[in-house]
Length: 274
Image (cartoon, rainbow, N blue to C red; front, side, top):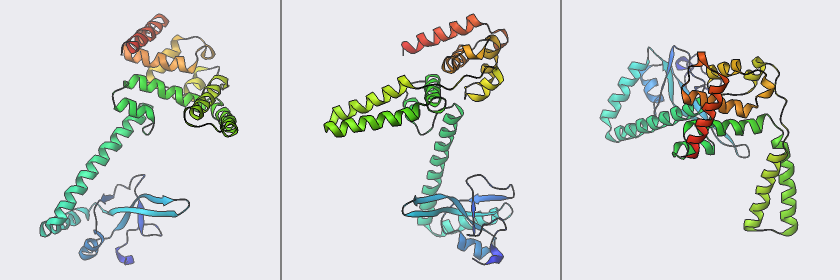
């Protein structure tokens, strides 16, 4: 690429990483073989870096999609893309396919962001259960919090590693197969869960609310105002309380401890009936 046509924001490799967004003066134009059009029109551009493919063992390769151009130059480039598409029917089919894939990708990204906003791992099993309708979003939030709490605020992972090593030793010693092998591994998970030691709970509400990823921040603050001491409120119970209060649509300004416990009871009953 001629340096005269290279954007100032391009890196050493003549591309721009768009994964964290772009400066307001620039836009991403997706598509194939756009570089020749930019050169033909005299538009300054840089390849759009969208990620990397490959592995640590075989090495990583940059993955690009289209180009980055200034907002001023974008209309000119888009007009030329449209003209090229009209001249080449196969290019139009490719463009339609690409546009459809982009719409589907944006939809998937929006769904993943929605899950993340709810405190649900977009790539985990809980997300699959929720998307398949096996659980509602509230139960998905509680399960996700329990999982996060176990992994982040206890020594579960260290204990699981030791328990799995012990299970593997038994499997190899007894030459276990099939269901017997799976049973030992499940027992390792159960042992790690039952023997885990939890982190100490903060003794003030400010640190308590900052430490744990509770859903519904405003609800959490009001629930905390009703309760006495944070050390008496187990984080998993507190999370369930926040979800139940939100689920019950209670007036937060008049919230009482009785309302909190009743909301938890009602929500538990509703889940048992599902």
